[in-house]
Length: 346
Image 1 (cartoon, rainbow, N blue to C red):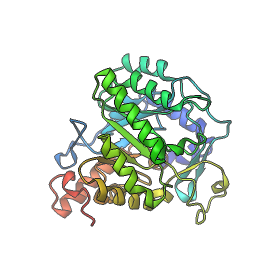
Image 2 (cartoon, rainbow, N blue to C red; image 1 turned 90 degrees about the vertical axis):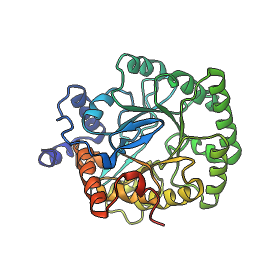
Image 3 (cartoon, rainbow, N blue to C red; image 1 turned 45 degrees about the vertical axis):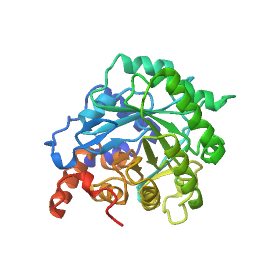
């Protein structure tokens, strides 16, 4: 069905089309998951078993409005946000662009969301039917970004299954400076202290930029291991990789996601996997739209995968599609469970 109406949807402004998709999910207009669960793709994360390793990346359900509808579509887990302490509009429109020939998006949304208090109340009033992650970040005009992260931890530590610390959006000025050794150490140290004060063991994930220097991988891993970070999300959108793109929107400022990010993400996943092995779970993001592309992330070292742009181009049935294709790949290769494939590429 989606293939028949995609051309009509793509005539709409991308952000308007996204908002309409959220409204449709709220009204349960999409068919529920009809894929028979297969034990070969069941996996464990943060002490919980999920039906498959396919998740929705932060950025799709920014305001935590449709996570249960997404579970019904067959996703194994959902990450909402990015959520800031205070409500903010984000950057001026237009701020979301399709690159159809490249199967990509460019966004400069800027953490538009309803704020931590409103969203936390929403989640409390609508219990998640699956594994829910909450992605947090600072307000654009915050005078103390570190404190903003701590507010996020305090607000969501008792209602989320894990919290993601977003230090990698290219659309909030100087946010990526938290990749710096000293700033990252200070941030994670403050979060660890906050968790101790709260007497809370919520798993913490860090979402990193694909644009980091290769020589910084070792130091980042050292700091993540120091603070027992549970997961590493690789990666956010990139400000590079534009040269070979076809669509004129490649000239727009913002973060590029989708197929052009796929190989860059896979290479980075592999580098981090060889440093952290099984000590930190890796969640692979970037260009996932099929069983093959998901499997590539897994054999490079990802335990789970996330997508957003893939759903824009392939439609709401993408989780079922990838689940079936992954199951078929494992069966053909004689792999009993997806966990056996993690990091086997080299």
